[in-house]
Length: 334
Image (cartoon, rainbow, N blue to C red):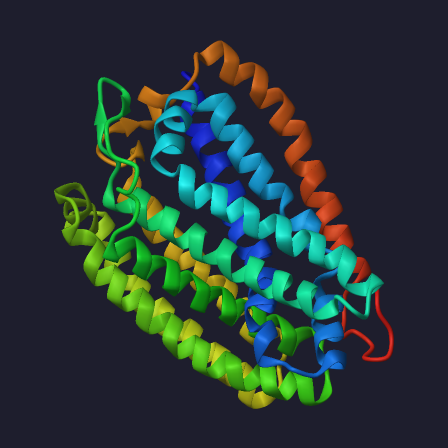
């Protein structure tokens, strides 16, 4: 039996990216909602709710980016020049919010500055992630296996729209996380934000689901050809089911349900992107196998992944288990 190491690695990278989006998405969402909560005590609770896990969540970003460099070097060398600016701005946003976690607790005079850094860094990182995704979906010009576009090709109405949509979606994850983890007035306000964000997120998914297939003939064939047409028919129904579960959980005070249903929404959206892209790493330019490193390298690196990925999953699961349940409004992790 011939083992397709390139396909296996594509699946691992896809899993790492999805894990990053759904895990770091909710703590970015908490930062996005930060300006809407003016009370210092509320803001302390919001940061305390993600303080034990936020840095571990970003492990998946390192795995996804580092893995792409190691196992799909041609894709990395093509995508990075096309997306230098949004990726750089994303990293700047992540740096500011990371520093804010450490410094905000250690000053009174500059607390407002670090509040702005936390919120602004979260919005900037989420916006740039969405813009980078939109730029990749709309296509990167490649000639002779190298990026052939301009400096500003990533900035289009489609990519800006996906950036705004991702900010809204992360806001939904953040709001449902706060419903899940907090109590009292903070939880009630988060509940209101979750209702609005859920509707806006589903509307955005609908708009971009209708827009994306017309960007490239490949997408149109994938979405409306058999057997992927089955997915195109089923997913809208599943999205509506998720929306119903979000509202049901909020209405019935089943605080875990809206968060889980929101994660399911993101998973459905990610699966749709995966179906659109396959078998390309860079849509309609480089396939998984075009971009992959030699099999000898893929085999060697796979040994490490088989060991490390389960370890990451175990310590991540353990961290969430240790800090399970509602946070105490009078206590914190700082």
